[in-house]
Image (cartoon, rainbow, N blue to C red; front, side, top):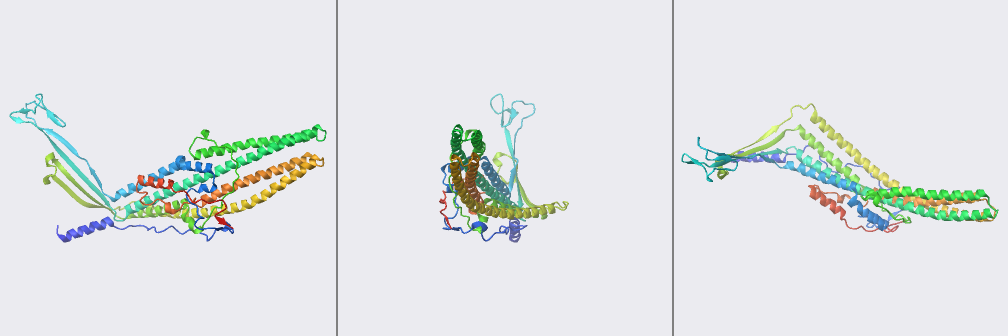
Length: 527
């Protein structure tokens, strides 16, 4: 080939191999509404911007060893988390499948044939695959001629390569990569969700333990009131109705205490499922809740988009759908396939590499769809509208995230105020009961006043316990809404989603994250 045609062919092949990329180029996440500040932050400000950040094992800010031990089991045994991990590894495998189209496909269908020639009228040997023998133990002969088997080999090779002229393969890899990254973010969101659910169930169970402790103390108190009423009845001071009322109130409180066991068992069973063990083999000892929720640093609203795995998953889904548009737009253009074949035909083993037996051919092929009844156009429209839907879903995820944070910030602020008021109500009800009891003993008030005051006190005490429980669970919700210390710097990279082993490395890396900087209760924020 002369130099100029050779140069022209080389440049043509290079342009075919590099080509261009049709469809939109995804540059950044679509714009989403982000507030300048949180409405319910009040006057709380970070004491130290470096410290006021959630990191790593966020549940350790509650300083509860039993909770810490339970949370560690979510990564190991929670079946939903393990399912999400498997889905991520499958998505990484899909990236490897897509990247395979960058290279040509090579196939072969080799054949081996053994033949043996034998003179007519002679029967001194027999043919078989792999050679021949005769009854004399030597190669047969007849008519003075030796008979020997011979082998011929046919080694065809077919090479096919779809030139990525329009970037269809590149867009497909881009789509698969973004989808795998979205799968990883979904895994992290699932991990955070189940960790937060476990913490909420744990504090709810401990709240029931505190309520049970309160009811046990109340039962003891009501037993003393029953004895007091019986003694007064025996002295002729109280009526039989007073005794019956005291007994009824005691029995109702006992029944209320027993009923708590139903809810406690349900929370215990839920925790067992979250840590991946049978409910029948799991139990928690009683430990009444008496902790105060730590101050959770909310940070700056503009950073939230980088701190929530569900937002990252939604953004990566948008990127994947953008790439899918390019995949479908490539259908408008002709497909250029470079193919070639080589064949070592009907040759003896000793002559495999001899030139005269090698037959080869190579050449391009162009295929263009002339009429498809609008199928390609429909696929492009479908991909475009899927992109628009995913953009809307991304923005909705952002809006929901800010709503959750505002709800939880407001909840913590209002519950704190409510708790203070309820504590004052408990103190007032206790004082009222003491006064009413003394008046009853003096014969000034009847027992109905005592029972009424007792009911008010118990109701206020239960409300106070429930408010403390709600404050703890709301603080967990706020941690979850803020992303639990996660950020997009932990998102799986392109290398992480290149194949299954790399994907597993990304999973293991997240599990082996260093311990966090601890936040002391009420220490990291100041008023």
